[in-house]
Image 1 (cartoon, rainbow, N blue to C red):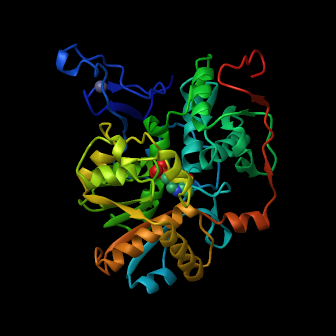
Image 2: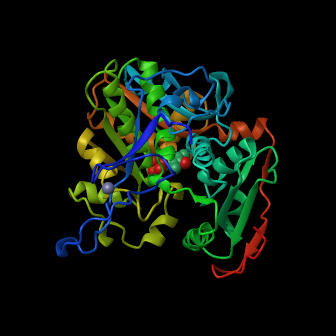
Length: 427
Ligand SMILES: *Cc1c(COP(=O)(O)O)cnc(C)c1O
Ligand SMILES: [Zn+2]
């Protein structure tokens, strides 16, 4: 393997690894009885890049920030975040320095993220990292924006992916153009948990890498490009970063990007305040953080299943987010200072309307939750009118894209009844 321009550091024990697509520290702690259940480091690994200065690559999309992505080679894509200074929404809210990090489709602004969410910024570097570390293909369970993003990126790059989803969510798996042969879609007659289990069983097969969620540095640093692009547009560190969260991975990514920018030295020395938001009635991290707890307890998500059904968008539901883990959401909020807002469905809907009328583009329900949190923050006097605010519109332009581009729903390669299904040679 050629020399890599990054290493991976365990935030728990400090060990440093060459990147072999590690998703966790392998360090086994000496057994002591106090931490009997915690023999392994419980920490995210963090990528450390040779370049301490932010260098802009001559690339049209997210690989503009390729030096701070855990890959050696870039795939040519226009997919990437676009940051602009808001006029319409800024005027409505009385904010002088509101910047919008737009992730989606909006040709007038050169935004060409064709699956319309920031999950695409995770997909391209992750597939590249799989290949560069000797993997052949990737498997993941996702019935939403992540599945779509990986299907699309696989279609373009030719890196095979297997996506496992509940059969009932099939319609959500559309992509621009037609799905090629590198995508296998497996539908299971079950729920999301069954999908995750089945994906886990299959991933034991040789060469199939797991996507790994927040533990995947390519995922986090890919999402972190929204923050880097925002700071590049402002030419300074944002004072506050607003984003709707389900897992909170994007919030962790913004924090890590901010730490790197502090290392650069040209963007300021103060971390941004993280203004994250969850959608009521399902807001486990909001509840834990409000009580000052590192642990999420069952009382933080009473009636989880029913609550999730009542949400404006279940994209923001996650029952086991990377909140307590070292280097996770709790640490990010503690280090930056910040909070987790809780947003009602009706607040999200009216925020969406205000955004659409003042900025003239449709946005995804999850992004509406972030806009609602910004409105609340302004109404409560929690932000000053001249602060530099980066609002991550994590997804948008989908209605626009549907009118202007051809899309197709991916056909399943296989439908199975349960997680014990015999898959044989079908994969
Ligand atoms: C995944 C997703 C989020 C939440 O991101 P996390 O930081 O992983 O919690 C927000 N908005 C959209 C559109 C998403 O697809
Ligand atoms: Zn460790």
